[in-house]
Amino acid sequence: MDLNFTQEYEDFRQQVRGFLKDHKGHAPARTSRAVSGKARLAWQKILLEHGYAARTIPKEYGGYGAESDVLKSRIIAEEFAKAKTLGGITGQGINMLVPTLLELGTQEQREKYIAPTLRGEMVWCQGYSEPGAGSDLASLRTAAHIDGDDFVINGQKIWTSTAQFSDMMFCLVRTEPDAPKHQGISYLLLPMDTAGIEVRPLITMTGAAEFNEVFFTDVRVPTTNIVGKRGEGWMVANATLTHERGMLGNPDAALSRLNTIADIMLQETSSGAPLMDNAIYRDRLVTLQAEVYAMKFNGMRLTTNAKEKKSSGMAGLIVKLQGCELNHRLAALAIDVMGAYGVLYEDSPLLRDEGLWQTHYMFDLGLIIGGGSAQIQKNIISERGLGLPREPKVPKVPKGN
Image (cartoon, rainbow, N blue to C red):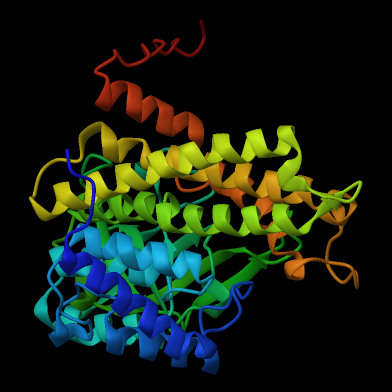
């Protein structure tokens, strides 16, 4: 097997390096978590124009319109990681909703929502989880009925990331109350400034309001804002969840973190020697490096399968579990190699990288739970991937016995 790149790909790598040399000065700091702001939007515009964001999204919807090429995508990711340069905007709109609309949305919905979302001008949140419907999402109770040309929504969502900053929400509601729970759900798009929507931020262990409660009181949304048909929202939701798992297990982000940690280990010293010379820390780094590269090659396999319209199979089922747990361990190593500085938080003048690694560590711990907990993911892998039997259900004991 010849693992060398052909001249076409070597030339492309030089092209990417040339772009970074000429433009990386316009990129926001990699410690920035903002999804908007003038600098972030200006950088996104540059990336879109040169094909380093939304590379394979059709031009008619605001993308670059390039053919899918797994090797070129990998070269872009590698060179941005080596240059320690922030890539394109990611998030629930770009990574989850856009591919869902490309697959299942109407032409009007694609034309209306995709381009501003790619530019970062339209920020989205995901209205899925409810107080009584988390892992068992199909038990959701937020309901909508039709009144004239509108759906009228009443209910509550929780753990809604970025809702306080979002312009739009893609939301699951029950529109067919008499249908089986998986068949009575619809997938709606709604503006967050609609009358009757109340957002209450929730402070998490990161110290920031990462999530929110969202309440709906007679919220009216046009019936044209449905993706798919009434009662088919579970199918649409699962398409979105597939893209969410890919986003949470992004190998490019893990590779970027790994490279940054290696730099920290070269800079930080113990007894006058770089931490890279410490066998224990170096062994931890190399172990994580092996996992990051395994994740990277699995991502290439998934991209190839998607291009060839093949099932991702087991390769797709492990992405979320592997990615979230690996990112948490990478953040843990970064904190450890910073020594005493690693325990600092918030506004300490000695804080490194603006507390990015401490935030990563706490936030990634939450992601191991959110988006489908690790335990749920293991059940999915065992049952759907390995064909193991489902856990038997305990018969309900009649009341009064």
